[in-house]
Image (cartoon, rainbow, N blue to C red):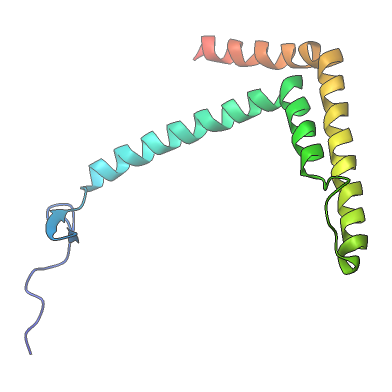
Length: 129
């Protein structure tokens, strides 16, 4: 019985894999580390963008419209055995849309004042670093 004479993959000997018919060599440890950092930077930016978009009244207004659009319409066919569940879902979606409208109204009234201190502290931290 013949043993594996290729040795174990490592930094000096990366693992060989096939990509279709062409063999290719996987990334080295340094490449993977750079890719991870790039991924984490992109992930962090996306988290910040999501947080900033959720801090706007327009986001919550669009969310309320989407929830109201998800409800069944007056002329939609509902089987008799699903009628109670459809009514419950209607109430849930309506309540969620109302909550989104309330969040938008709150942000329109107080949003700039609430986030001004947070933005100022982040800017101060960035300037100090």
